[in-house]
Length: 192
Image (cartoon, rainbow, N blue to C red; front, side, top):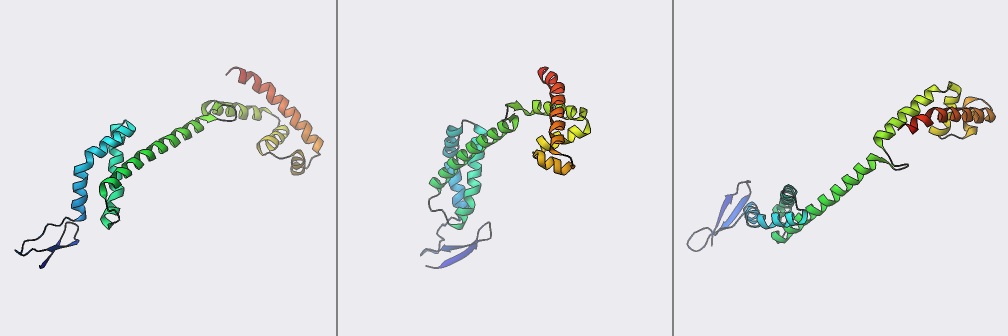
């Protein structure tokens, strides 16, 4: 038996054994083998994906992605039995899509609701604008104390130290500022 050397489409050397008559024994390259498996099993894999997700486009995408992820491993020789491996890759793609859509939907819901009080972002934005406007209506000494206390979360003693005023002054300015904010915001909030 003699051997004939050829190159496939990728430039990879193919060694073909020759039989007694000098005819080359047909040996398929990894690419040919993969393409043949895709041609033979695509319909079953697409049906499997469709039955799992009930969406033709998502099923085709999952099968195509499974092919793309499987080919490099198959080319390296890491996969012995291609059909079961492709089937599992399609199943994993569909499950991954389910998880991805679930996470996306959960994140969209989370972004759409302020979980502290169930207010949507649209309403929260309007509320923030009302609060900002009400804060601007306060005298500056009260505004500074309210912002430091409730937005910066400083204690009364920390505010007193920062402003260089007694703690009692901080308490009275904060109380008067909050009263003013309630008078301004209560009617505005009731109107929403």
